[in-house]
Length: 129
Image (cartoon, rainbow, N blue to C red; front, side, top):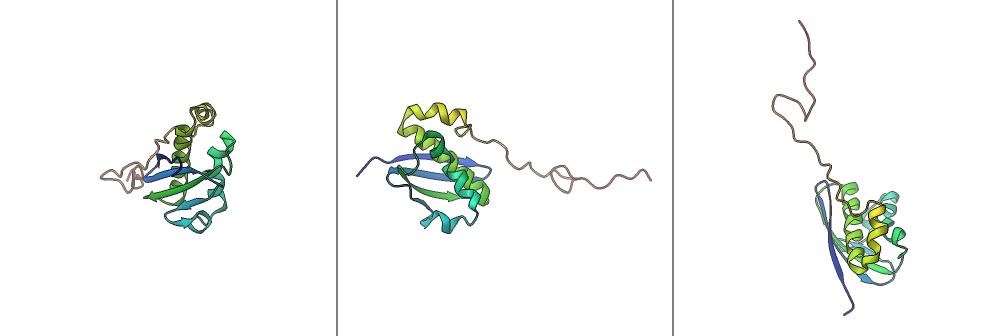
């Protein structure tokens, strides 16, 4: 069997387990084709960004298992996982990936709701009388 590289990508509450194998550029998400799983056109642009930055388009097949979050968070988690897996393939890819900000875990998550408020920060309207 040929070389397989594994990495984990995260974004909000989405976690993507990514395997990349030398191939022709096929992306499989949760056992379905990429276009079947993600109905939005921008998702493909987001997910293929690490390949464009490193100049390795259509050189790797990607197999992804993704859980949690929504579609947007999931595709960004996949992008993070692909970037980390590409770094495992070739250490020279680290510099362009880091410069593009693809190796950094986006730490922004939903703020918790506080008691006495409607949401994390939304309160009832203030009235003097």
